[in-house]
Length: 307
Image 1 (cartoon, rainbow, N blue to C red):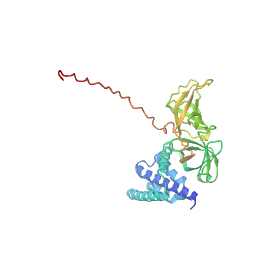
Image 2: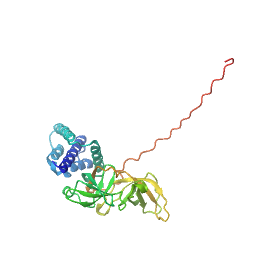
Image 3: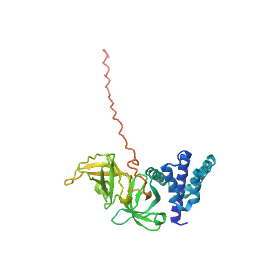
Image 4: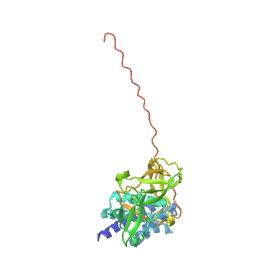
């Protein structure tokens, strides 16, 4: 088996395992939820070479008889898939990345194809190559994300690979909406991590907009949702900048994604029916209340007479 076949086998196995676990967890009680539909579609559409297993998983919901037998069957399949995954040598890091990707895609109702980074661009632009292409339904001008947020956009496609321009590239321009105000603007990539420490640069449309450190933002929809679908987490404001000659507020944005450590990603091949808005943003951590500790010095004992 070649390298390409091994990667594809690992992808099929891990997605089927994730789908089986998700279906067991959801059960009959919520078989029409958006996340369940996303997971079921994800396991069936992204990897066409395993339709018979995916069908048996999906059949858990279509059967008319009791569910206990199907649950036991799925649990047996999960055990088998775990053994196969172990044999395939899937790393814990890849499994965790895929788990987070499925969670974000389900929350945003994004129809995705999973892929792995197989090469890094050597030119002036910051690009990566993924092991998924037109044969998997990938096209140019599609959004790429991972379990943390926006990665970039597809710029070129072959039968089994595609090139992604990272959002950190200086030529990348991404429309964003700030939460919770809804202020619109755009971020550009630094191009070099030495200039701004890898921070994106934000400019908003409203001259009088009030922006503050810690504000989060997501992608605002592009025309026909290309190249960016709405609601993908982008980052948080790290610093507000007052630049001479600027008519609108400027800020530096710390992206959610670490562009130097990309592994498993998802290519959005179909946008959500409705914009997820800010619902996919991670919860903002609240600082712990300050604790004041007062220390009272104990008076030293008085010397005793004749001591």
